[in-house]
Length: 379
Ligand code: NAD
Image (cartoon, rainbow, N blue to C red):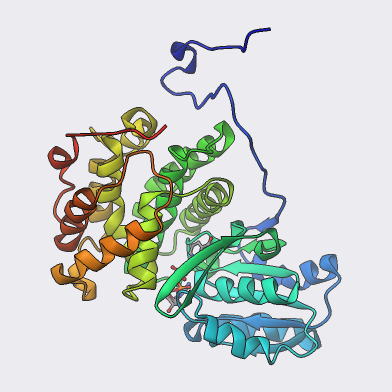
């Protein structure tokens, strides 16, 4: 029998139908809702854990301490030394002092969750993640670690948290600038998910819904920081976008952010916020139809324009130079990005990356005109 073929038009303008795909669902348990951080103890019982190490960054010591306190003797310790980009040195030092802990509870953003994942990889211990940013790491089997100035990522089911506890009260303490950057970080997962080589229709539905959730929620929390429903909606977006990140391979945008974070030690969420409109302008020239949902959500002509305008409207950073990155750094960043590139829907060239990073350096509107020529789509 000949292979079934479907005409292009059956996809429809608003449909994420694909005639062929593989899909790996995420089996993590999710506990979602205001004050759910107080239910971590119930989740320990469910996982059969009796002595957990609670992990956080220094800024989250208060809330992590509250959770550890509520666990009583089931909290074997509190460690508040998690650091951005998960340095292997921190992991190894903590690993040597893991003692008889039988589980890990990460309270915080991607840095706390990253350390728990790194420890889980080495120890096999189960994990509960209680996120306080929108980074989405809690929903992925991905771990990024930094050693010797280079950030490398691995995918391993052992690092995916078993349970995620989403409490909007945790994210509601995020300073406005971090709300904006972290939201753009989550949106980046969804946007790259829409054109991923291994995308699937359910992931694409989640991606579009995740972006919609942030587009609606962030202006609301900016207008009224007491709007708990809007914080919940943003966390819903974070869950959806993080789940997409966990299902499909990422492309040029994430590669550049890993280079800028790992090699230049720039802050993770902020770099995502700055680079996203530029990376999307680069790729939109090759796959405009796959990015059309993003343009529609932001009511813009292109996805890149929509993301650029949204980032500005919510007060996200827009220029790498604000973080100490300079024009002289661009050639090295391009070299590192080209050394081990991720798959990308458009061929990656040295010149293209230099133009992209020059735009991101100063925060100008993504230079569509520069990217429209010589477009090559990678099949
Ligand atoms: P982060 O965890 O480093 O948090 C940023 C800063 O904000 C820290 O100082 C932190 O203490 C503080 N903070 C966090 N939540 C807060 C809150 N509610 N109120 C006030 N301050 C708060 O940053 P991030 O952007 O969440 O995570 C970045 C790290 O996560 C990077 O290392 C990145 O590589 C990793 N990450 C991994 C994945 C993955 O799937 N493996 C996905 C996304 C991010």
